[in-house]
Length: 243
Image (tube, rainbow, N blue to C red; front, top):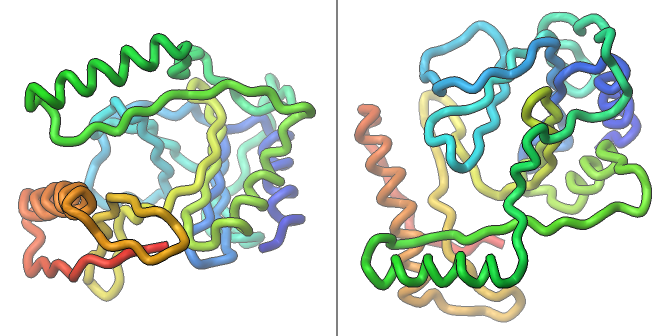
């Protein structure tokens, strides 16, 4: 992982004051960098091919809608593979974009306890099969955040995860690492993973009904989506534990 290159590309985005995204795919040391002058638009995700590189980010509540990032330039490591860099913005302030709405899910203990209680009540009424409850935790960094270094550190610490960063006008600045694979396409074969269920790390643990049920829900959902989109000859492998 070339940390100096990552810092250089992140700094270029700051100097231009443009929308920016970086992504390192699992199991590689290669990073794609996206630069765009236009504000991303929230729109329905389309399935047809496009002649321009796109970067999507979708809030949990957006269903099949996503912010569409139309890149002016894309770098694969230090190689320009599409377009050209946008011109510097007259409003460039050398800082990353902030969340304009402040819509982070923050609440005190009582709020969160009530939130979970409502979930349990609705599960008991058979309104849900599975719910993932989440909340935000607010904390302050002692110094200015170096996102380039955070991205490089995450890439080194989680080699088998997809590491992503984006800073977009009207969306904010986000960084994350996910082990979940959306799709791969190789020689006409589409592959994905129904990843669900958790086990303690360390010692060997056997799957229980809980893990099989959780993984089965995701497997059923993906299989149904494939059928809706006329994907044929679907093969489902045996379950396995990933670390």
